[in-house]
Length: 133
Image (cartoon, rainbow, N blue to C red; front, side):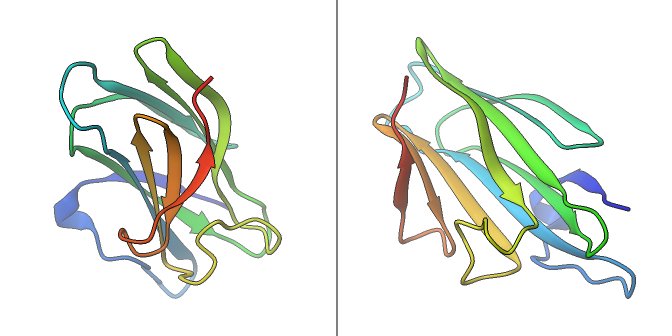
């Protein structure tokens, strides 16, 4: 069985392993230069709707996703910033063939910026993944 949980900064502990299931932390951050427009993010998994979140400059939405050898968990999000949109973006999938943050099995960062969506495994070295549509 797979689980996905929204968490706060205080709850963050990268990978949590409770002896039964291992979790990966996914961070989505608004990396815009100003607060002229908020970033709207909505995410869902196979089992859960993580809701819509309004993020202003520098704000983050974090969640844990369960890593299970039995069931493939996939987290799909949409991003909206003014008239710019990205839909059906896979930000997490516990599949050996998908992981934009493969170097770190415990955490993955996504950042929306003026020119598109980026991912990182350390919150510093960003790789552009998508242009706004």
